[in-house]
Length: 340
Image (tube, rainbow, N blue to C red; front, side):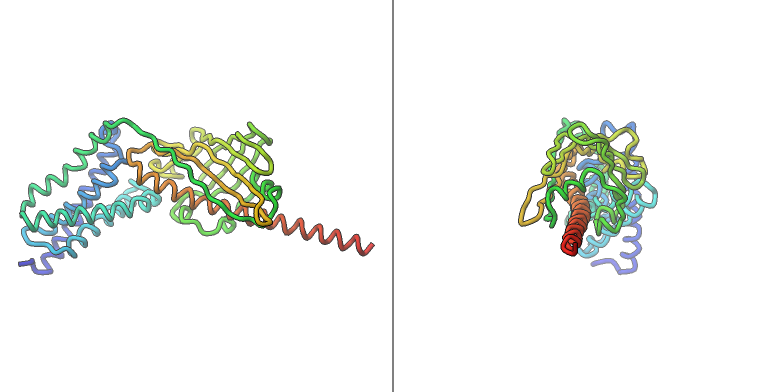
């Protein structure tokens, strides 16, 4: 017989508290420098198994000695996970960017953990043993995962836009980009969740070896050293992020480019005359150094693709405006000549 609803509601409140407390303790343990050799934040042990365990523990505490239904299993596990994420944000353990990036994986893993814990509890009523097993799972997997040899994953993200302007007119917009207003970038998911917006880019010279310095919000600065200069068809570069170029409060260190887990390597623009205008392609190659390859690769690609579209949109607006101004000037000059 299922427990009366008021008792279940009280147990779910306790279950959420237990899940959040357990999750925060693990988060602090995984971040503790002395444990870094055995426990890593950007890993399957923390990003997948920890929410799995949080969901399982929440369901086992909510069930008590009674049978727990599947809807209540999902409610307890999802509530515990959402409160855990909110608690990490409030306690300044994670920034908004990280919270958004892990939200889908955390919720799904927590609910799967809750359903498995609920099935075990309803079938065997071995709550104490199950609770201990779920609690120890991340701590057992973490050292095993950390001992695996590092394997980097390089990924290339490429985005294209069609611009109604000549390659020469488009290329002129790429090297130096002054006074980028937020409205010029349009809507971008990555900027919405806190990624700094670009402010300007200044080119020191031209040709191979020249340096393009990009400045973003929150005092972010980095350099792009030109490796290919084929005006007006290609401008490629390699990234150089100097120490302190990305302040600690600008990006969470777990997703910081040039940081411990992710780094941008090189990229560039390629232009081709097409359909009376220009096809502009922006490419960026990045490396994922975390143990969580698939999830890190997917999010890295999504973030860069979204950022690419924002930058390409800016280039399109400025190049087409320059084209219209040049056409109007030519037309005006032709009219004056005819009047003479």
